[in-house]
Image (cartoon, rainbow, N blue to C red):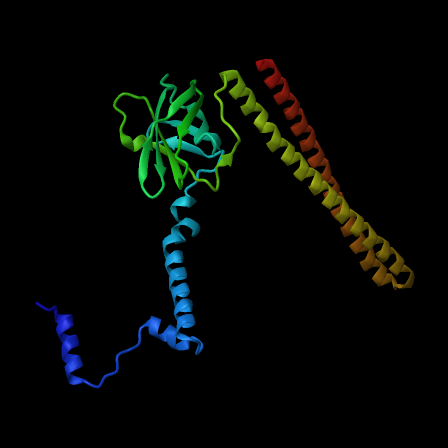
Length: 295
């Protein structure tokens, strides 16, 4: 039985037998092609259609929101719902040669319940989703290192974890993600001792501190340039006094005093930056000592 809409369409066609059928988008495109030979036109049309299908089926791979966009940034802290425990992703590396991932996780048990063990599994997405076993390399109350085997081709990986607490439910699961475009690629991955992992974790903080020092030094350089420009402006204002009335000189002096106050503010900022640089350098030295003591 025809649907009501289809019946109305048939009736309309019977009442208007001479009604022209609207051309399809393919026909419109074909009509707009240059008057070339039929074989060339057909090839151009085929290429256009193929490009459209290629974009449609690959758009989720390249557009925001697709599977490949799933990623948990390094340093992200996540809380296990209802458990008062957190986990921070401190490192996630991938060796394409070994088809292996290594994930370093920092745990903080703020419930002080004495339960500091966790269970893991992983899901690997390509054009289907497959579960992967997770090998625990290091397990301590605050530091876990796990290995995840992955296939040669994948679009995203989800590492799922749960505190090993009696009676816990799936609602407390924490999931973290990575993908081939965001994960750190390394030549190889090999299990290490706990001390080696901790030393690497400690030393990794140095790079961040050194970057902060560079930023502060760049800021000081820009502040000094600004001071030089303000001082130059004050010299120009002083020269203008020679050809100014008493009232104009008062105004010039006010501008000069304002500029001098601004210079003082900039110098204070430089001094604050230098103090912070000294603090960061001391922290770097302490980190190196701490790493050396681990050996």
